[in-house]
Amino acid sequence: MAYGHTDLRKGVMIELDGAPHQVLESSHMATGRGGAVMRTKLKNLISGAVTDRSFRTSDKIQPADITNVNLQYLYNDGSGFHFMNPSTYEQEQLDRAVVGEAGKYLKEGAKAVVMYFNNRPIGVDIGNNVYLAVTNTEPGVKGDTATTALKPAKLETGLELMVPLFINEGDVIKVDTRDGRYLERQK
Image 1 (cartoon, one colour):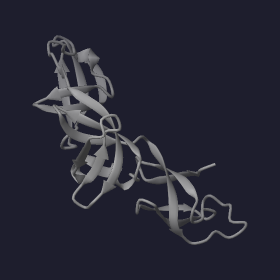
Image 2 (cartoon, rainbow, N blue to C red):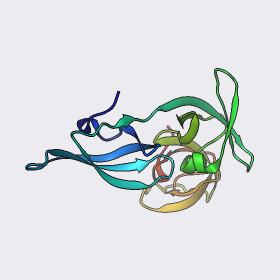
Image 3 (cartoon, rainbow, N blue to C red):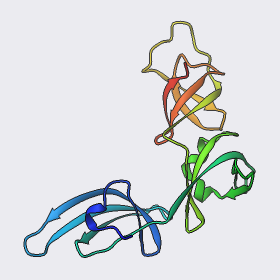
């Protein structure tokens, strides 16, 4: 079933020119004699390119055939990231280009959703935040409770970021995967 131009809302996945795209923004424009137009900003889920495109009322847009599969992250051996399907125990290796920024936050045993387009992996989603242990940072000093002063810390995945002064080695912290920022210490 094809979409009409009014179905193009933020988050909708469509297929254009043989590639999956996600609608990032859309706005409906009513023109005088030409009819209504839906202006969109689309992200190509394979290349990452963002483009602007307009659709008329007569356009029929195909939904993207995207399948999400829950997998468990096993390890990275340098040649790729290895995942396992927990229900079938089948393993799959994904290269860095497919895993993208999510690779910085993956720890052994983590759950991930792998997106497939026409049975080909195109991306990995691990959620908006993860909990990771601090493996190396300067020790906190008693009384350092200010949240505005920051110091560098290295996490269990190798990721380095700035954390408040009261964070110590061994603490588990919540990290925003969208921008790599410290959110809070695990309670």
